[in-house]
Image 1 (cartoon, protein in one colour):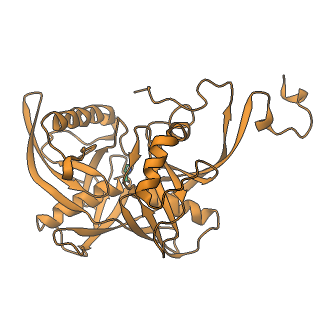
Image 2 (cartoon, helix red, strand yellow):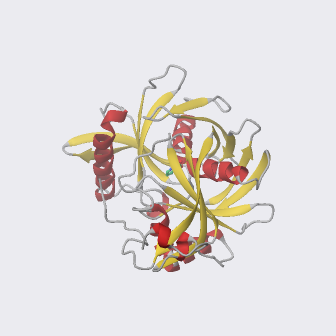
Image 3 (cartoon, protein in one colour):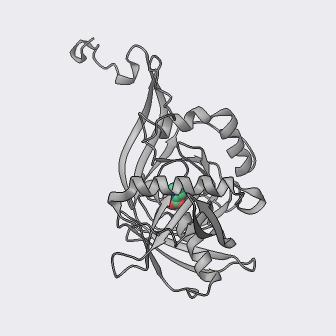
Length: 335
Ligand code: PYC
């Protein structure tokens, strides 16, 4: 059938073999790292808490995760965000973040993208809002200049300077929580350059495997699924550069919000950054997140405020054609 042969007025989604879902998405990027926000349709979650809703999504609606963020509709750096009803009185919404590998506790660049996308749709004006996530509530502020300030869940260093052996060499790093678990390593000996992203991703992937093989975990045996290499900033106006490997081989185009939070928790623990001082974290793509910390209620923990900007790139409707063997996505492709 050619387009001109279509009966007049028939929507493309109603093509034979086509399932025109009511799922609507808004895509954005924060410092180059993409977020795909579901703003209508998608799975309905009925649990009373965000933790229950996450479990429901994991066990009953995982197909949606792959359909939304994996190829051919997405790619391995894509992070998805599903809005839910708020869990706590006073919050405006709940949000569950996911990627091609699974689910994220929190996502800094993603939360900034969610706020910018809701503002783009006219659903919020400059001012404060609270978002519930499976690992706690974050406080965001959509600013008049379009930037977003985000007070993350409390961050802390769990282990200091753990030794890990890989390929006969020993590396050291802190294990820290910033909404996800990170191994933060400075003595990696790698040049943090964009042109080396593939090599850096493979280095971090092997380091992560070594951590797991050598029994290095977060609190309560949690898997350390993010690796952050730190180095000197290229731009003198910035405080430091990082390379962050997210779950799988997805390396972060942004400086990673939860990773920057974990880094500040370590800097605070080592008395290397004063409370309230501004840290400008640079990624290997050159994008920047500003961050500062304040003591949290719990001793030894800090609350990190991130400031960044997200830009909307697309508004769309998800189409899953019934006879498309890849309509629900695939997760078995690795670069
Ligand atoms: O910005 O926190 C973040 C993040 C986590 C995974 C991808 N981005």
